[in-house]
Image 1: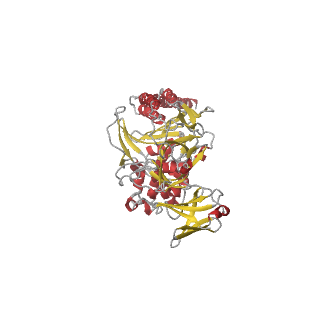
Image 2: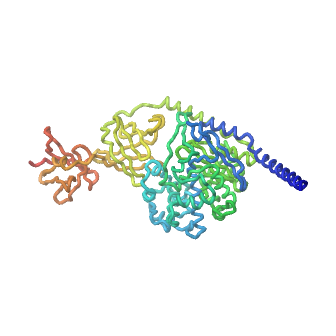
Image 3: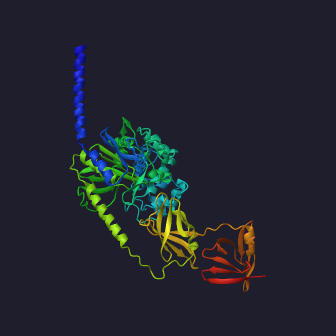
Length: 603
């Protein structure tokens, strides 16, 4: 027995030694990468990053670098939860792939057959846009991102309703244009067909099936001990905390939170034809189709920095290119305080996931390329060095430009109105609403998701500057300009803002005046004579001022300023009452596009 046991022990030791040598050989490819990653964090002023590597059906590397909480110096771990942003899109489209396998839908049928409440801008779009068009960003609609990101909405259905007012800037299937609304709508289709929310579908179909125990679909997912805090870089080098962004209303486009250890399971399934631990989680046919080109993203020759990186196509929730001769499937993600990259090489059976708690960070892409070069046996190209040089040159140029900025003013273009003339609520059917208010003798735009200081530029044009709750107003970082437009009577009636769509977005103005009670309205009551015609001002109900003109309708008077009312039923018409020294109303003036008409109050 002892001889046999000794033989078995020796055999086991030999096997373990061979296995260890094999593992050592695998890890030799990654020798020294840790120090390079740490240097990247330092060079780019990033708080933390986590990395996982999958090869075939095994996770061969997971590690955290830096801090998940920079202030408390809590380290990143492989299980640290990050927001993955638009890396969520592959999950949403894969859900449709599962539903197609179950016979619940196909990708070529007009999407309104499944979701009639989704209405597009014109009949041609309604008749022809399919799920495949939406999954590959080729509907003809540009991003319209500010509509959800800045203006928000009370419900996902209310965001879906706005799509009918979004004008396409390209014909259907003519040009690739990234659009988060179309991924939100995919989630709505899945909800309609399954009777379950998108969030429930994510958990049942993927998180549970793939053992993704640290993954979630909203900011509540950060209420765990090992959760990353989001950061951004301010004043070129300062690591500054940001709040978590609640994007539940557009969740199917990018609200998943996960860790690199969980995402490794997701990528493993993609490398292995949709299987995880022997179970078919994603249909094999869909896996192949999703990582195949559906729409060209753009043309152009490879850049000088990386001539071996070329090709740019979109599959179904994935971006496809050639990385130094290797077929790459990848998607990035970015949301306030976080940047992500999910990548795999199908022909090489290698996957790389990089998650960082830095807003708009180059670190995930640089780390991904570093690991790709090592794992694919390629000569490392120090892209980070060339990018740092470009950043330094750009910062110097920006600083020089700021110092030499032309401050000349257009003659006669100073503020010619009272700031109160601009106040009110501004509404757009495709973007929602915002309010302009006066605070401490300055004008501010209260957009649902942020506050902006309005600095006068010229005439009725103002420059916006975001008011950061932690750092205040940074006047070196201007946003969009707001141009206020007047009606035929000279009153501000709308604003227009460039929000990255086909044309400037117009917001109709409604002055916001505190409602007047019945006692305050009684002084306006009476009969007013326009020569041979008389108008009667009276109160309807408890507190609604009305003006009756013989032969016309009974007009509703809405307060817009002191002693000034707009006619609710007729745009561009207002009534202004004149008051004597005693505070008595003596006349009214009807201000309308064809002139001003005074009527004395009859005694």
